[in-house]
Image (cartoon, rainbow over all chains, first blue to last red):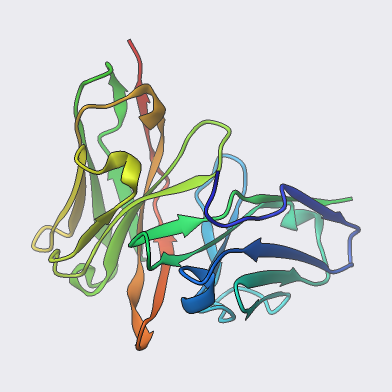
Length: 110
Length: 126
């Protein structure tokens, strides 16, 4: 049971937009910054978004992040088959004094 | 090139010990917090531990407290994870990651991992 809650899967057609939600509480998302990671099977995770909505160098602007209250959202526009991967949200939990991840969301581009 | 490389994984019996290492290159190691994240077979990411730049602050997930110890040697650009009293449920790929952590606004923490290693596999089984 993950501290952060994500939908197990989402899907959309190529070229469309998809959003992935991440729900938490006041001790984590509500009062701390959120990051998002992309992971392809058999490979290491990759940072997509940090500080709720900032993209590291090299991450295309098709990827965006937002936060409202105790929830965060990852948006991906112009979907490509190469975007099929698992996506994880993460943050710091001030009550646990620990890092926490969501359970992950598998994106399928139909 | 900024990179981190893990080593030290392997097969160990329940109750045994293992020490993972992570060698960093391409960046100023002492300027970054360093973390361990694991992923059990077919499961999601699980945060394990983080150590501050100086090594003065360490944090752990509850399930490893008292069994795992994170440490770093900034003179050797190396991060460690000493794992004792290993259990079957510790079986996973262990990733080392560099990142940032701190406070931007009073009480608001930022924490993310921007460079990840390829991982090292730990299997706990008799």
